[in-house]
Image (cartoon, rainbow, N blue to C red; front, side, top):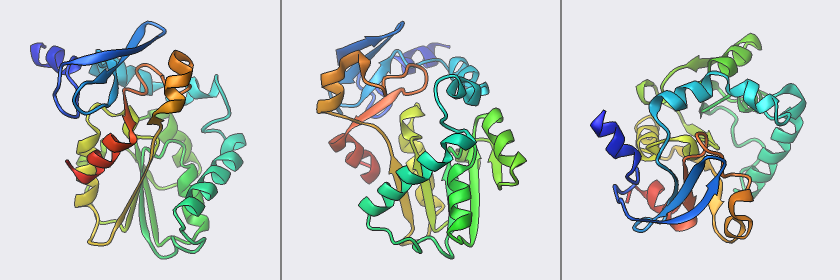
Length: 227
């Protein structure tokens, strides 16, 4: 109990305790680490709070938007098409690849990769609701902890995942173990900067319990480089 308490008040990226206040959102507060610059919920939510939040994650999202629904699939595909264009990935760039989607939710990216003729697709998520929905559509996905997953994949994706994680560095390190030399890890996450500062607590990505680590671009690069 003491260890969990201490962990909730330290930066999960660099273990620093010093910070500056950023904003308050609902009953939570966000602070910026004085050492690595990561903006985090302070204190971090407890493990029980995180588990309870994702038990009904799809229901929570459906109350707010069409995200994770069949109606939102077209918007999801359009968003990813823009992402692939920015990365200069050709439409046939996924053909024949072994692809793992971490935090696959209801399986929208798995559907896209099936259409792109990937050799193998697999998703994993911690939300029972989301996985049940994906499996009902016949999509290959698992309910469980990514850190316990084994296998080999040419491409691993984390679409809006690392901001949800108490220790995102663990996921990134594990992803590298599951890829051969030359494999790709694609990460999409909100970036702290001028826009977040301008909107303050009204910035859409300040979402307590859900978004618990948010990164300025330099801290994100350091995280991915294992610094």
